[in-house]
Length: 266
Image (tube, rainbow, N blue to C red):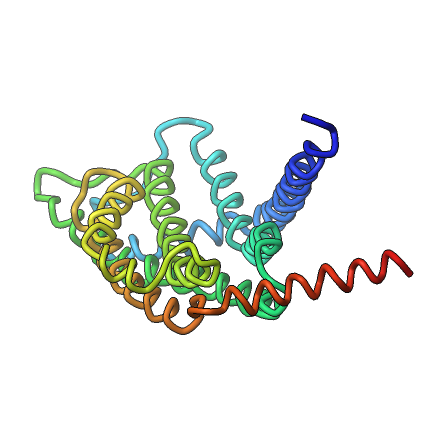
């Protein structure tokens, strides 16, 4: 294999490295800014739990090790940094895959980035405002007069942050399906025909992403994902590659190549 054959792959890896570095910097900046508000951020994160606890004075949040509270605040700041930097993260991701788009399709790039942020916010909000209250209320109902919940900061952060990020990223499903249909990787008939397998995969993913073996949180993730799958099929119908579009796109590609050749000759 010659050096010329290796160079495109090497350039692709170099681009991936640069985008990962920029994404890490964005998360780092978000982390530093969020650390100044770490206590307030943790209060916001625990608000659904506090509301579910209500007037039960026997249930309270604790930390079981000396450095636990410190590291919990660090993790809260990191999660907040990831959330705040999602516009940059999605921008870098879609920029990395954009070379696979044709010239006329790149005009949808900005809407794709904005929709990515929108779906992430909707997913995280669904987890925070809907899934959290029902899940916490369900789990706390197991308390009795003799058994009271002693909630660890570390365990609560692990549970809540995993759910928030999982809901946020899994709500990108409609956008991913529409993009795959636009690239010609899937078709609407394929998505409809394999709906039952998609539902099975959705429940497997929900079981893997939700912390603990509880059915409640798994269902609260799986059911919205099934709805989002149907929305993704609608998106695939609207934005998917139409029959006969390959000829037009090849023509555009040839035009781009011709224009590039003329520029080189000039």
